[in-house]
Image (cartoon, rainbow, N blue to C red; front, side, top):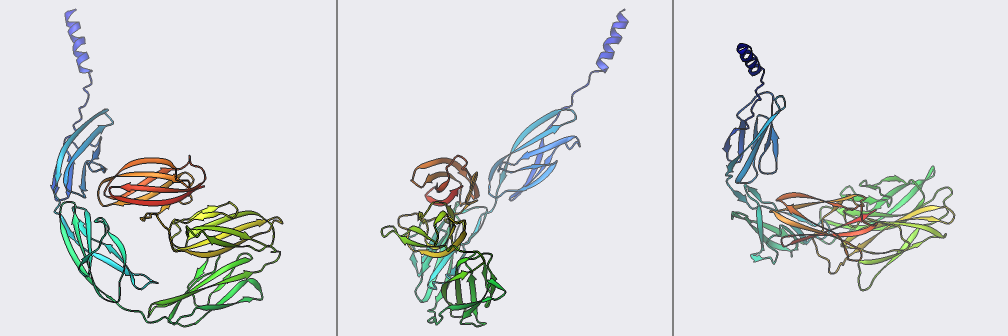
Length: 448
């Protein structure tokens, strides 16, 4: 009996399955900003996941990663065996030593219409660090700009000017660069733009436009008032529907750098069209950026829809208004295009577009950045570039100046994506105030 018991015990020991043990150990090597990581155990059943300490990750038995900034990073290696159902995690500290280099550089462009106005933009070349401060001088005189100003505009008188930029990085690397600018006085512009047009007998909505003056040495930019444009000297354009269109022509003489523009109303006729659309507008004498629009038609208007957008950038002040004869406060200077769409008591529909220029917006801070999509239904997105890590405070205000949404986000050096939920907001226009460090930016959007 004793022998039988011993035999059973031996069989039991033989049938015991030993559970496999995982080991997430790894080795690494560093060459300047690039680190190589290699798992010690490369069993084909293992899965390897890496957290590299700078917000990035990787997969595989061995990986290579290049860090953007010097410092000490905690690298985590996670190993999992799906066959034997075991896992293990280990961490190691690695040091990244990137030599910091910095080279000051800048670009400048001349305004296409105001030839005394120049735009300056810092374009430093920095490795292993981030440019933090910018000091500008013109003709040896320091400009009274914040130290974080990387771009600005300046009116320069004719003559020779010296623009110098000195940069400082977060670790103290510094570099300076100077450029010589020769500002010339453009000759008097002798351009007087005008144009004529003719329609085709076979199609009353098709027009042939002829500019005056007409020359191969001139550049022509047409806007036909219906969302279409052309750069041809003698364009032919067909309108899709009848109505009154405001046609604009810009003629540019690129050699002396002068231009002139002209507007004309164009009436497009079509079968069965019997209602006219137009409007007038007046500016508030105290607040010249506050404009009141009044719709005009030869019939009784039953519905109005207004579309306003910036002439050069549809991100700015792009808005749809369904109120009758609205008053709208523009938040930025420049050229705007305003279109009115009407329906009358006879069921007739028509539309009319016209441009206006806002030359003064008092008391509003600068630093406008676009929001998208605009108009928005669910989420508004912003892209904000930071020169260094900083906390970002975001506040959304309605047209009455009341805060309707607030949030904070930890910002990092480089591009930062900001997402603002707007499903809970009522339809209308909203302003976004973004603050970080001693900087302040603004944006604007419309909630559908």
